[in-house]
Image 1 (cartoon, one colour):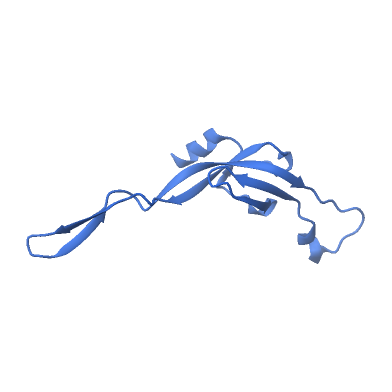
Image 2 (image 1 turned 120 degrees about the vertical axis):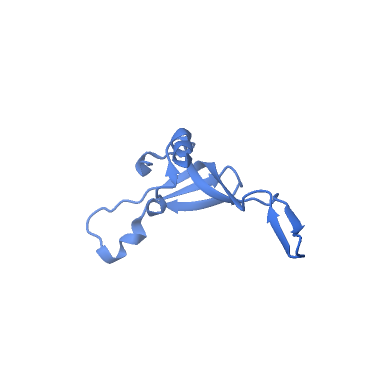
Length: 112
């Protein structure tokens, strides 16, 4: 599990991500009764450990009193880059679930 408060720019964490396998090949067959069928030579999806780089952290804090109904407005955010795809996006602490890990070995152990 990740300690969200300890993430700083330049630090990394790891995500288990399901990636579609575009390179699998379809093989066609016909049985002795003339029925046509096919199968693929690999799985449709593979699970991979993806490295996520923290680019920036926006920390919001409440000073004084705040409306409990507007608490979503003060969530801290982190700006990250997916090192596999190169995409950049913003995450909040409530998006971290059991598919995110602080170190790569923990993520690999989760897959096995």
